[in-house]
Length: 105
Image (cartoon, rainbow, N blue to C red; front, side, top):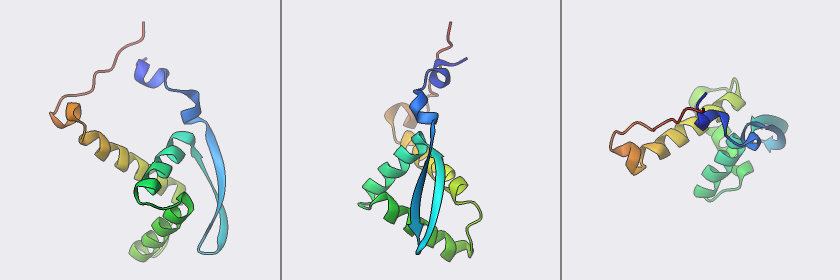
């Protein structure tokens, strides 16, 4: 197995349920800590609290699609898009070099 995957911190894939209000409605969302960390990073870059960022994202999806079928899945995908775009700006990725995975012995 690749060390990149097998040796990741357990905290990153432990899930946590958080309660919040979106448009006046109480709800809870269960995500892995790595996703919560990424969402908090995105919110901070947007100069918003996490709750405000999630509310705004939810509202924008409603405006664009008319409904939100699976908000937790949308958040997972949003984090993946954010991380992939961030990785694309790193010099080692921008040059077209593939990341080196190290096999565990």
